[in-house]
Structure formats: structure tokens, C-alpha cells
Amino acid sequence: MELRSVEELMDLLYACRGSWDAPGLRRGRVDLHQHALQTAALLRRRRPADKELQVAGLVHAIGPLLRPGDAAAHPAGAADAVRGLLGERVARLVREHHSRGGAADEDQARLRQADEEGRTPGVDAGVLEDWRTVLDLVAARNSRLGAVD
Image (cartoon, rainbow, N blue to C red; front, side, top):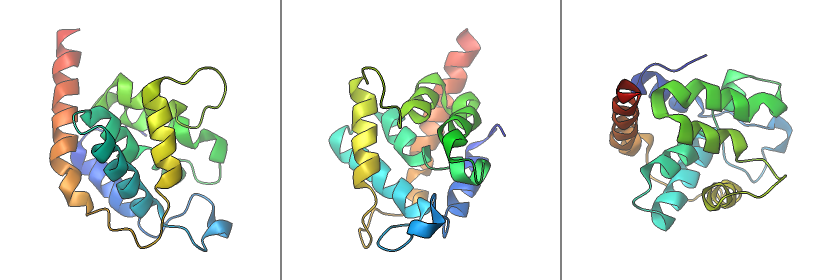
């Protein structure tokens, strides 16, 4: 599935409510929706100017909705879905955020750390609608870059 608009992406992110990447491990965890918001908020605090990194944190958790039951394919599925809309950098960060082999770049390490920390029940990370403008900005920037190629 390739996402073609920010609206489609927002719908998918809203669909993450009540979904878990590992259903048997729900106790003490947050659903994918809250996890995405927490991860993005942590990255916003740490790298306020890096909108692509923040967006990667927001969308990295959509894989379980795209490829249910295939945990190994979640990062690739999410990356493939957002590449055309959000660009190659966001897709690369999403695809490789679980990679442990080789040398991770600083951005991958930041995303991985925020991913691990963004699973705290009860943390107020805002609402998804707060991210629409950032998603629009990254998508618009990506479409302009694609037009230049």
C-alpha cells in the first residue's frame, strides 16, 4: 500500500488507536497511536528543527496495520507506504529504525531511542491533529524535490 495523501496517512494513524504491535504484551504499554505521538514528541523536543526525523517517529509504527501478523515486515511495510509521500529519508529512517547490525547514523540512533522511550502509559503527548501541519510541510517539500529530479 502506498499512501498518496496526508489525509490517507492521518486516517491510518487514527486507525492505530487500540492497536498493538504485540497483542499479548498490552499490560503496561500504550497502543500504536499513543506510541507514535510519544515518539514524535520526544524527537520534537530533542531536534526541533528536524521535521523529517519527527515525522519518521510519528509514522514508524504503522507497519502492524499494513502487514498484520508479520512483525519482521512491519518496518519495510511502513517505509514503502510513506516513501512516495514523505520522501526517501523518512522511509529510510522508518525501515532501519530496528536495525541493530552495522553502524547506525545519529538520526537512526535518536529514532531508536525515542521508539524505546515512547511506550509510557499516561504520558500526554498531544493529539494527532497537532501534526497535520508538519506532515503537510514534509509532504510538500518531498513533492517539490520529486518534481526537480
